[in-house]
Length: 151
Image (tube, rainbow, N blue to C red; front, top):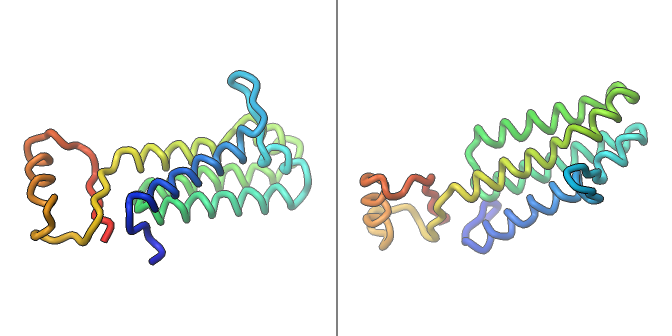
């Protein structure tokens, strides 16, 4: 039961993703500029990398649980990796981390993927009450979101 099985689970995954993005890269915000734990901890050798890896793993896990497409999860992993590797060079990396808000960008990608998905509770089967209606809407072009059965 690792993956979301109800719309409430998906909602909770989405909320967790938003919290991680805000905590990591926008804890203290002044207009369009913000800094989070990620930027603060980047100045402490080793700690910044650990936080970045942990937050990135949490984002990917929550996205996987919400059944986000693998391509989006791969892009999120790449963004978080770039952000984490920026700390290899402390002087340059610290400044890059303060400006490059990779966790926030990754969180937005995941939230967008969740919002662009139609979640239907229950097993995927031809007998599902919403199946015929959903297929008809997709074929007519009325429904353009990705469809995921949560069974």
